[in-house]
Image (cartoon, rainbow, N blue to C red; front, top):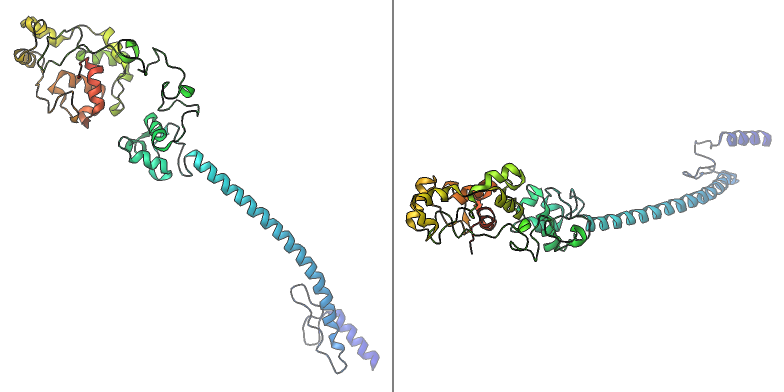
Length: 339
């Protein structure tokens, strides 16, 4: 009888489960339940084996947990480092969503991509920076409004040899920019010849000299250098263009025609009779909404020969607004002194 029982127990042990179907030895996930136990209590043997198996599992689990903790710590450290790097990049590169840095000329930037960009585009002259093109003026505004630190980045954008010689090089007469310390007298090549025309043919005052008034020169200059004309509000006409006009142009045909009939207009003074003669001989109305030397609404190019010439070079002045830039161009383009 005992032998038979022993054989039965051995068979159950080989099967690895109890008579009622429960796991005898257990596993790391499900510890052994052991036998149900008879009156002799021998059914507890499964529990002992389960304990041994569980101990091994605990050790293995502990090792895995340690490895997982180490991996998690490394991952956390890496994420922290990445976040720090991203933050640093954001502060120095113009923001995570900006297409390019604020110190670099390029496509228009989205106002929301960077606080500095938002400030530039909200400024009086910065709207185009987020609508059309992020040009040199936008770079200059970023430096001025946000202390962007563009000077020293190796790019001469919106800077001059005066404001940032490190990026733009040293100033010299002939570099195409009328720099500080230069004027029409010391560097006409950059600043343009000094304005000698006291007023337009539509104004009264001193006698006019057809050789110093340059309103008729724009077409010739634009044929020679297209960069002098047609660039809108960016004021393309520089001192170099005025210098070119001075060398290309002859006598003003309108003033010449008036003075052939009334010589006193070019010797004694330009009075109302001279103005009326100009309206007949030069095809101008002389009825501008405001003076060409004052900012205001856009002007009709037919109201003044200077307005006609200026708006060929800078259409913005006759299409949008006759702003301070247009007033400054009166001297550069027409040779008329507004002071």
